[in-house]
Amino acid sequence: MNTLENIASLIYKASKIGITYHVSPDGDAVGSALALLNALKLIKKDAYLISKDIISENLQFLKGSNEATGNLISPIDCTDIVIVLDCGNYDRISADLSGYKGTIINIDHHISNDKYGHLNYVDINAAATAEIVYELLECLGLDLNEKSTEKLEIGTCLYTSLVTDTGGFRHSNVTSRTHKIASKLKDIGVNNTFIYQSLFDNNTFEKIRLTGRAINDMELLFDRKVSLIKIPKSYAEDLGIEIGDTSDIISFGLQIKGVEIAVLIKETDIGVKASLRSKNDFDVRKIAGALGGGGHVKAAGVALKGLTLNEAKDKILDEIEKELL
Image (cartoon, rainbow, N blue to C red; front, top):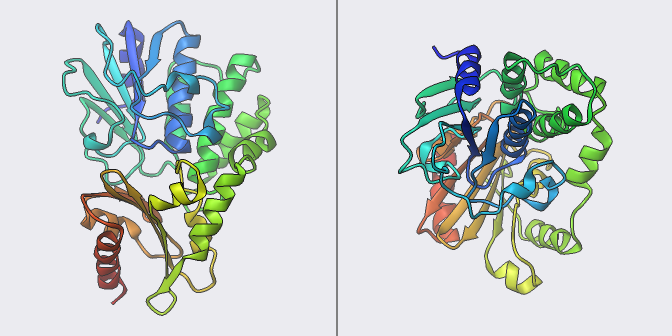
């Protein structure tokens, strides 16, 4: 099995290092990648971000987020290592690695990870990939107990990952390790209030209108155990906005008393993107997995190419019905 010590050793030997994550990167993917990016630069490594995606506005307070322009999508010449963070499937990497001949290191916490890297470090007990990155930075010799501007910026990235992938420390994936790391980050000055406000209290008026429209059209199905939110592309024209990240909207579906599963389906240019969340013991990863997606027990997703919203809805509900019976 590959160890973080093995990975740290390869990083020290490498001259040029690319870092990437999964498509439509969430807070954990972005926070983990930028924490590692800033840390490698701090130890004088030539590191850079590879990203097909532009980082969502609510995460642009993190140092290095401006490097995700959507233009650099393949490794630069002479790149020794590409580190892929928080991505369980090769096809979902936010980079074109098809012509890359160097070493791919896959670091993740999803149980459905395909182990596509030359080196794979998958810790399914980690609440967020950021927990693994924190431990990797320790293996690289960074003193994360030391207070400095640079360490604070790294810590802010890591804390952001923890907050977003644990639902603000609410989800069952939270462990004592999660809280210990969060505590250490607080000790070096990480401002949790600033992070929360940047993430959750910084929406545009147009985003709030989109949320209201989506909630207004929500459906309750299967004896009110399943909430379904649909976001067609027409909402963008109706509201005069560009529909970006909608991952926060699904939480409203799960807040309803009696609902066990929340589903959000969003129409895209190539089909439908679906997100699934659950309470208690229902495993939405099975639903996503049956349709070619993946994720966690209580949070999963899938891209359904070439389908309409209604076609995607029917496929997802068919799979949910099998699990509910």
